[in-house]
Length: 258
Image (spheres, one colour):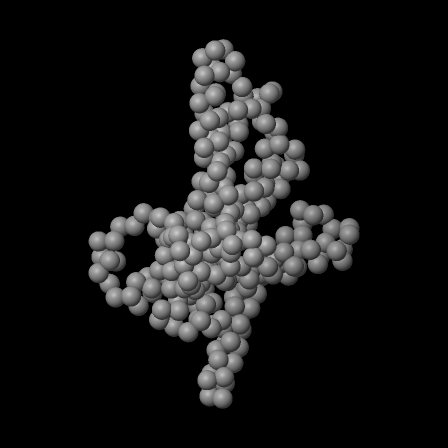
């Protein structure tokens, strides 16, 4: 898979807005690969819109074609968000930023990606997973009789696409971090501290939730979240991240002295 992704990118043909190709990781190449494939949805979307307009004028409206347009548009635009992060092709307001030194720019990018964007992306991935799963359990379909009736497929793709954006953001944050600091685990965790804390909290929550369900078959599913041990997962997450930072920092100091 990695060979296929890497071979799909010509290192000498940079896309619009794409930069630092030689520094791109496998996650960056994955985002670009998925974006390149998804980009073919746009000409298909244009044909679908044109066909629907003509058919509607002729009195043959097709609800499934309306649904397909929303599916293609929603999927491709969400993938495009990840592509813009990886290639730094998103719109900027660089009145002040463009005059800063490279290290200062990198610090601003790390703060923006690690402390502002990543927490939002992780929260959305978590929320959208439950959103998509509820749609799957309900077998949600189109509101139209002749529409696309497996709407849960689109909704289940949303958390996966936000995970793609998370990978893009973490990879880009690492590239900016390396401009002014060493690429160590503790510097990486500090660069995305709120996001790392939330990820550790969520991991603690789900591990404990499934452990309780597996060991207590009589408990109601709705009551598991109210168990006392789960009520403090926010502090478990903080402890996990702080311990990881301290241990990584200690190992880095030992390695530098050695």
